[in-house]
Image (cartoon, rainbow, N blue to C red; front, top):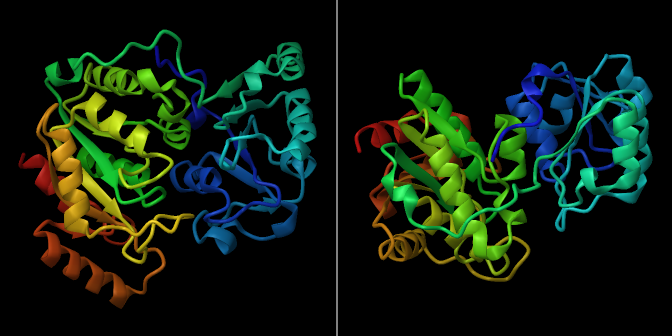
Length: 350
């Protein structure tokens, strides 16, 4: 049901981020550079042409930003990745010609947009002619079931990353915790529920593309699949309970995955929901909300805090961690700045 169509780790990837390359503007590009640096050969963005990727997003040293696909082809890529995931997930019209050119040059295409390239007749015909795969990472499998609480039957320990808002680090924290758990010798697996995690990890279901009645069922299927060969599952969360637009998918993941425990993700500098004027409740209130809504289906507690302090100084980050640990009574860390061992320790002791 969730078999990967392409393995990004076996390809030389050029990322298309024309006019949009940046930490916040091109989240997909940033994720691919962070987790597949050995595979990314270049980023296309004429506005940053000639720069090193690290000059733009502070990671990816040695990867060039190039002007166009013709320049990128000199680095012998085998795959073009769409490097943005804009609200609504539509393909920028001006990028269509670049994609046609890439397919004509024999590059496989990896996309996380809601606009499915595999449903574009022109792209499909051109891809067939050039023996190219169009991988829509966001396209959900067919015949997903309604949730039946089967996730509670798995032997694996299930941890769900939840949070105070979108883009606070639920995917990144999940991957970092999984990697650290494996380094500790635990048989851990990351379970992607969004297009960026799928593009990095190679499997999963993009929950936000699933019809609403079946989102919890999709979460359940992800857990069942991950538990086949693993003892610890780190399920990627989406949205937030207090988010006016994405609270539905958050609740579906909570009830469908039936976690044994949760890791709460938060950006300390935020006091309102991004792009909204909705004020964020206190951390203790938001944690209580998750635990309260989990309880009727399967009781689960928040056992640790993963902070996103990218916009804070070292001194401010240390203070935020201490203050939040004092406020919640839970271990907290910034997994990028200080690693996730503190969170893996509490997970291992469940």
